[in-house]
Image (cartoon, rainbow, N blue to C red; front, side, top):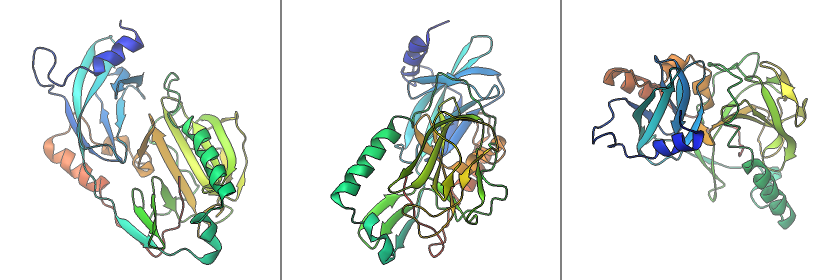
Length: 308
């Protein structure tokens, strides 16, 4: 069997390799979405020149919110060691633009001091080191993920929105906000290791959990934090309490997900995974799933402010 490095190299071969034949295994997913390849008892998956373990014998392929539309080669190695190649077609998603006016007491987040700017830069550097997740570790999760709160009201579908604060400051919202009340418990979506727990300038009290297989969950603006870096947590364990710390107009539950470093819509992994676009889908099924994933209509008046 090829080494991980050799296998990753195979992923870089042309979509027209193997004697010039076009790969028949094709799946289409929107920016910020996730595709799957089920039905063959997978052991290992590959995309973007990376390999990582399958989740419950299924391969999943995350698509970043700003991935350039086009075709990417995907790979699946089954449990008999046979490699299968396919293609992931990324479609452009239409994300909303939202204009928001921040109250005067949040002006420091639009015009930070030199010291605050240095602080934010230092925090971004620390965060950047963990967002890729641990791809050498098998998944400590199954799909769907657990809900991050005991009761999870409908989100205003704000994932991917480009926010324009006070007509001049832009921010891409790469997580989801849920109107969960202040003081409510924020729970781990799966087993994992706390890789960062700290008070950050923009995101307030924040907890990052590595769930293995390149998946990292993030909760921001917490009122308080109940865990510390290095802690092993279980699915459903309390990480902290809902709050409105950092750049937030009010208390709410914010959750973000990175898979292989890609920013994906968290709501997709809270639903049955069969709702995700799959290699086995008919064209009609694929179109229906993509249309459902792209139904975004944020309520501008109620959408809280945050940054990740």
